[in-house]
Image 1 (tube, rainbow, N blue to C red):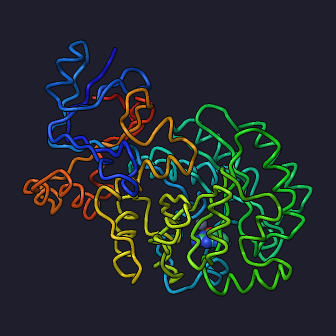
Image 2 (image 1 turned 30 degrees about the vertical axis):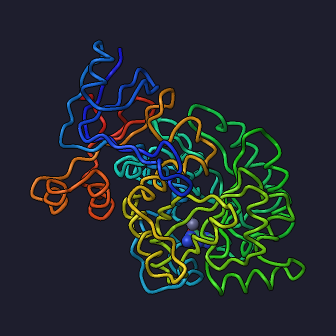
Image 3 (image 1 turned 90 degrees about the horizontal axis):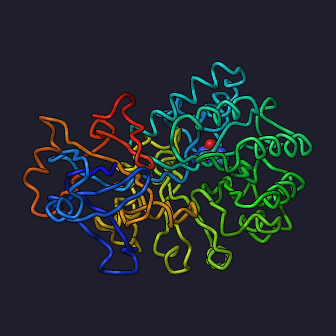
Length: 434
Ligand code: GUN
Ligand code: ZN
């Protein structure tokens, strides 16, 4: 049976960084889907006529957008959101690593996984590239819970063999065995995929990064994720650890870790040489604006990424980021570019693209998700402004769909997310669909 959702519909069937025709909106619109696939999208009256058989879900007054794609978020860090006053390396040492070590028991890890996955869905995120845990049993618990969440999750056991807490450090042999075990158990099962995940070059010896390169080749479709060029002190540290590398990117590149399925988080203090090589390799970047300002790490050189053809999506980077909302990250991305002298002037349609389709591209899922083109999978988020809210007051007076979209990115947060669908199935809120 097909279903038709009636709402204000907006999406980006093309890339607004490349085309003026990329944004499509229908004030009284509809998306029609059957099982997991989108059949069509357009004005309500037209869709109603074209699909008289469809069950109508009347959501007038609400806004339907493609599901959000989060390209960088840490599973074990929900409890440290808001740990203020520390730059990256101190924040890791004092707050983050101890919190990550607290997931050594399976019940705690399962509880943390449930909470984390629920918050993603509650914020309209349908797909995420998730930095996991250093602890095998915790990462296994995370994958088990992710398999039941309905979300599209790519994740991996975090690896490091130096400069962490002793209980989080692995060895080259153990890293290989544990990663192989998790790949065999979860990669390609349902909506799960595996990402080889060294924490960053500060915490990884050359031999460990070499093993990461071997693991990445060990099965088709594996992803790679890590951190890069986030903080000046971190970059100096890496320079000292890898004296024969020409720059931070080279510490990954030399071990075969830079390819089309590689996603590097942050990349703030990046040289032109690094950007040019990243573009050539087809690497992507996870831009995490709220984290970058929270830790005082710096601002993202967006125009330079565009110039070098390096694709980027958004990441909330919880726990350094200020929550799971990609509405929030989009607004912070906008503000960051406004503050930079060479800032890219983003409009609401760019933010819509960055929150969904851009992430889909980073995740290699651009053929399946990201917009409402027929045949794509039916992933979307339904936004209903709460009664008596500033958001509702602004939306009721918005002069155009794009003006409404600007208000959504500025004011809508978790409280406004009415429902989240993945592959045509409502995953939030839980319970029987209305
Ligand atoms: N670099 C290495 N680990 C981390 C982390 O957990 N968060 C951030 N923001 N940067 C990192
Ligand atoms: Zn991170």
